Image (cartoon, rainbow, N blue to C red; front, side):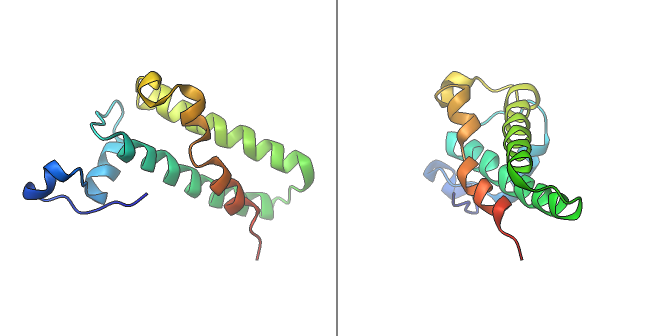
Length: 116
């Protein structure tokens, strides 16, 4: 999950910059030459979503199995909508929709469960 600064001389090393990745992540239908770069975007999208939902569930307050199930549904649906409808990537290049849907899920679940 490491992102490195890409310079003209480092392009062939497979390194990429955070700002380029961020721009591509926000632009619909971006081209992802490096599969790991796109998987990093999915991973960090889920971490941010887990923090936001965790704070929201704490403020509401939602508790118990209903809150956990709702988080899982929202988290999986958001990732699926992002890579399928927004980025319009070919899921088979990444091992199918299930592989992309579970990318970073357990880490984001742990982030969601952390409470102060």
